[in-house]
Image (spheres, rainbow, N blue to C red):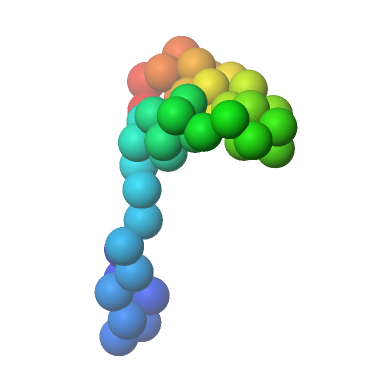
Length: 47
């Protein structure tokens, strides 16, 4: 992703979910529910 003259590396939503699934911290598990819901909505909208 480019921001002005700077290139920033970001994870795709799918990759972020995959990463969070491997972690066991409570805050990661909580965020995982939200990320998966977001992915479901994006798929329903065809994005």
